[in-house]
Length: 203
Image 1 (tube, rainbow, N blue to C red):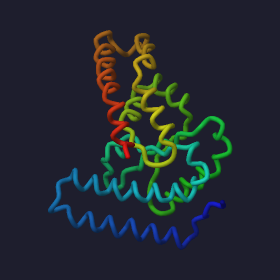
Image 2 (cartoon, rainbow, N blue to C red; image 1 turned 120 degrees about the vertical axis):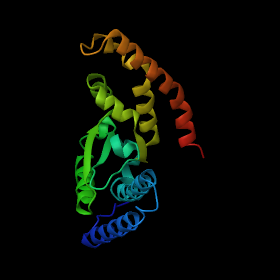
Image 3 (cartoon, rainbow, N blue to C red; image 1 turned 90 degrees about the vertical axis):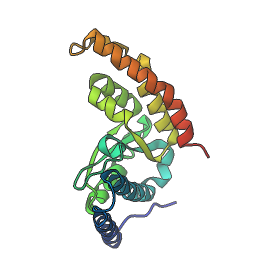
Image 4 (spheres, rainbow, N blue to C red; image 1 turned 60 degrees about the vertical axis):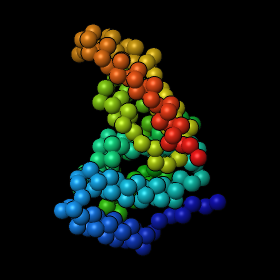
């Protein structure tokens, strides 16, 4: 089955859709609170990103997971802010999906969605999360959008697992008290993650 290649007409259609819905949301500024407006912006973005991802990756859905992270993951999509995406891929598809990922990201930019992204395998995510707590935090705040649910669930469980952060005791910038607080926080989050995942994907 051949995947569709978006053309200029579809780019124009998406741009018009985004501009129209954004104006509609802006008109509600005096009526709605900021949280409701940010959630509305996020929902519009989600729907468009998911629809476009289907066009580019329908034949490889089980090898890729597109995940909202950072502010976008928290459903805080402010006007002019980037759409933060993690593109999680199976190691064996890392090279073969390069061109499709590049085209997917270029198309999002073409229609007015400014993407800040990283493309990583599961092992790369865990490695970077151990080195940089800001990356680990970004992954904690992630939301599944499209693709393999198994890949996403595996990442969630791994990043929450205490044994993945044991080496934080060697982190020179953290005191023992900070390490204890950090681990306790992650332990509580890990206790919730199974419930959150089961609710998210139930039915």
